[in-house]
Image (cartoon, rainbow, N blue to C red):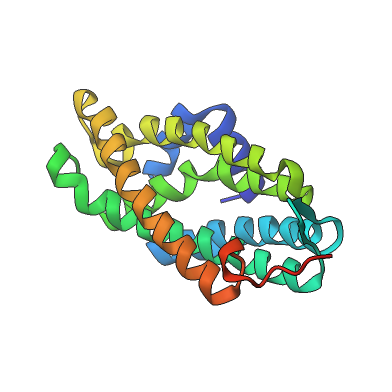
Length: 198
């Protein structure tokens, strides 16, 4: 699998790319190491540059400097990798409830390749003031996952929307908890008092 080709094809021609992905035998760990980690590291590099050298103002607080760059880059990588793994397990655990095939490897493919727009959007963190726009790219990822549910999970058409909605609700909770944990550990939450005025 060529990384650039996969990114291009999943974004521009998702229906045929999902069919191709369905023929590939990839384990969860292979998907993480060959696709998720490289893209997460690109996003982390952009985040490091953005917060390390450009920075952003939050009211009276300024988030800028090497320490901030490193912390935010770590958050970027950990969130991406852990997010894909947790999402894959959630998607797989919910599969039988929606008459879908339970297969963690297919769930990992669905989630990792469905997250592609969000991974690309993370590159906007190179300019922290517009980094939030990258999150909007993830909305296209929801559509990509919708398209992938049929080929990869054999989800009936009438169950796809509710399957995605339930998955997203569960993930909002998971990501909120993950964000609080990482923010507390790394001191990247505004409420930790670790932001320096200046």
